[in-house]
Image (cartoon, each protein chain N blue to C red):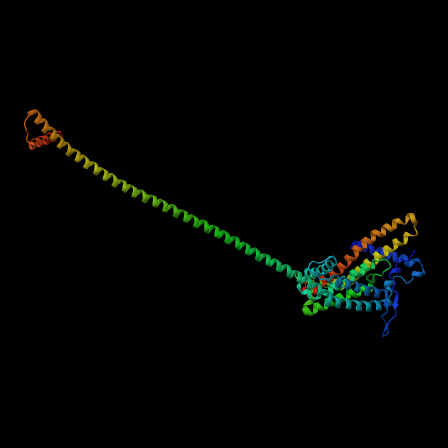
Length: 241
Length: 191
């Protein structure tokens, strides 16, 4: 039976070294480039005709725009407008990574903790910096919800700080674990198809078909969850509760 | 998220199984191989920066422009429809006003005509009455004259008859004046 974790292995395609740092172009990098290309083509080719009454493709491009624009507007407000391109890029990047990763023999770079953690820590640091720039020291009142009696402060402040610091961890592990678990399960069941033969192999195959449908849902849902949590964190930084 | 936790646990169990499977997978989870971190993070930064620039500078403004244009067009059409509706309402109002005006004017004209006709009729009636009255008076005058004339004629005839009768009876000439005064006296006696 094939190792269900072999699909997560990083293989170097073009070895590159930059000042002693390994910057090789790997299968992970290849799929990142593919995702960016696919997103750009999806949006620019879809909008090429830019008709007043959109066709199917243009509708999908506009739908993705309005979906994220609505999410930013509802969760952050009008002040979130400057961050819309970032949120949109984040959503599309994760969404396309997850969906392209569902193609058999492809690679899902969101199944790597380092990738999701890098994205989460970027969001975390960015949101914190935005909060401090906008509110200065008042930003730290975020750790003491208003209306709480001062007696509770010694207990609440550490809890709030821990919960704040755990944001990038939960954000990155949620996406990575979902992707990895889904793909591992697909591979585990796929590994049973041939060994169980022409009679028994149908059962794990059927499970894989069902799981693939489920994985499409997870792919979209996790991209959504990552993005909406980013919006909520941004809202905290901009509006301080 | 419970589903996610279960799946994560499953994944780690299968990972552990793979780990236990043999030396081929002794490296463990590829995700925990720190030597792959640098290239992944570097390429993530490059590709995401490219994506961000492409989205912020090319794709999103284009979509935003189309959406803005559509919203503008729809607003414009709605506004036009509203103004047309207002115009139609004003026209309907003007029509109603004109109709009411015409109706009122027709009413006054009708009552004017009716009054005029009544006045004319009254005038004509008065005139007729006056004429008839004059005719009656004239006729009465004629009748009175005729009667006087007839009465006068009767006196002459009576005088003559009396005269000739007296002559015949008496066989002598009778004074005409005496006869006449006698007849007058007789007529007066009868009234």
